[in-house]
Amino acid sequence: MVQVPAGYEAATPPIFSGGSKADQEELLALYYRFRVVNDALDGKALRELWSADSENVFFNSNGHTYYGLDDWLKIWDHYRPRMQALKPGGSGQIRIIVKDSMAVIIDDHSGHTRVRKWMSASSTPTIVENACSRVTLVCLRDNTTWRVIHAHFSVTRHGPRPDQGGNE
Image 1 (cartoon, one colour):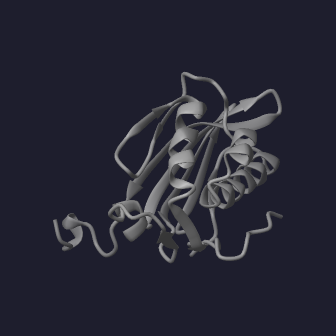
Image 2 (cartoon, one colour; image 1 turned 90 degrees about the vertical axis):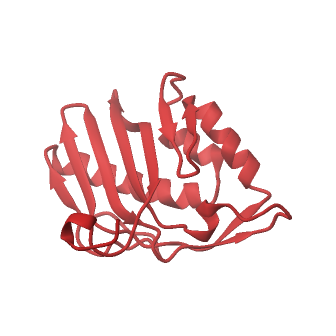
Image 3 (cartoon, helix red, strand yellow; image 1 turned 180 degrees about the vertical axis):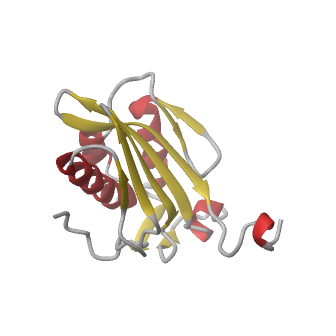
């Protein structure tokens, strides 16, 4: 059974599709570990979770694209002296889909209670003011270990979608 770090609890139990019970638990543990080390802006720990392949592509909620882990870690080097996570955010509905040696982890409402402090004299970026995002991680099993090969973060909205009567 996966131990959920305090403050990262999901709103509902995760939904799994495919894969063995061991794969499902390893991927869920990888996701929670990722959330903790990502909030800490811990590049060394991220290197243990993410594939080092320079062909991998990551989309951040700041609207930019990063190619390879070294490129991705440059943004954390930039933010580390400027931003501090004060309170972790919980998770929403986590879905894990496993197909052979590839998996997708989706959290549709990550960080809805996250609190960050901006410590720079420059204007506070949107990713600090609205720390609520959706997270999608694509993972590939490298021999026996699951590694993140793609990440996509995007700002999420609360309430119903436009087709359900919500705002455009």
